Length: 494
Image 1 (cartoon, helix red, strand yellow):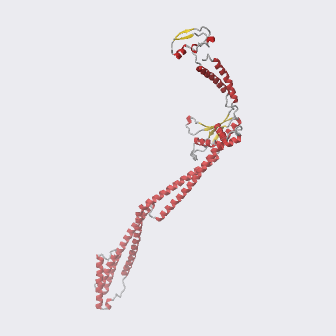
Image 2: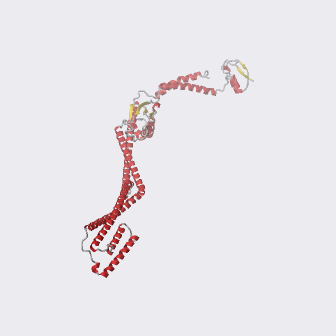
């Protein structure tokens, strides 16, 4: 096939390169301006000033890319740099924005594998336009928008976080005040029965019991001493009366005094009126009083009311004074016992109420501690957020560092004349071969013994040489007998 159509193939192969070169001259050129931006890590460690922005660099770059490549951002750039002067009147602004979006490419820089880093170390901005100066200006403008957008976004996030924490802190302060008021009211209501008061209540109760035992012991001693003093007084009075009158001391008056003393001792010891000894003493006193009254009636009022003319002795007076002192001690200790009993009951009641109060008190203190911890945590977070916001404001424009500024392209990246010329050569050659293949498909002549066998499906018996050149007889022969060349013979069919 190549031998039969080599002229056609050669013609297209020769015509292809000039056509490719001419196409390179006609196609509008494209200039590419590129800039490289690196992401600087924070100057202060996160352990000192925690970062309030949890957005990764990948997420922030994607968000900024969507914002900057929006119509609201690109339409002013188209108008500012007059990017498409010939198309502004024929195409809509939406179509021009789409063209500019296609011309702008933001490519993240992949981190090195050995660093095992997850965040992007930087990104590149590439702008492709027909004018090199406009490509450089648009590339610089887009890069500046990225840097400014990052600073504004960081500031807005810091403001949102600090405002949120301020509101949360105010709510936590209110909750803490409420818990404190509840706890103070509970302490005031249950003063003395709180769990913290239980040890002191036990100590006070122990002391009161000791005081009560001491008062009881002192009361018993005073009663015993009083009884002894009264006995001595009776003996002294009896001895004095015997000395003066010479009568038996066991007179009715002395017996009555003795019974009264015994009754007083029993009552001082705390025995009730129903006690047998108290009942007996009262019965004896009543009987003696009746006997004395009867004796006085019979012997006359003078003898009944006769009193000793002589004064008591000093010993009797001293004994009476001791008895009076013991009476005062007994009265004092009795009142002291009553007071101590009231206090003991009070502190016993407090100790018994402590377990019931402890549960509610524990719940209130737990709630206050939780509110206090929440307040302290929010206060720390607010301080950290304020420090981070101040640090971000001081470092505005330093988070992104322009490594390579937008360059001014000196030559277009498209079209490549050598590439177009080579493409024309390859295209011409391919086109020639394709036409040759099509011509061969349309040619139905038999050019070889194999074609005859394939077409007729009959074996060839012999080949007869051509009598005269095919050029002169070709038109007279049937198509099946046309020879492929001048020196080829005729093929006979069986």
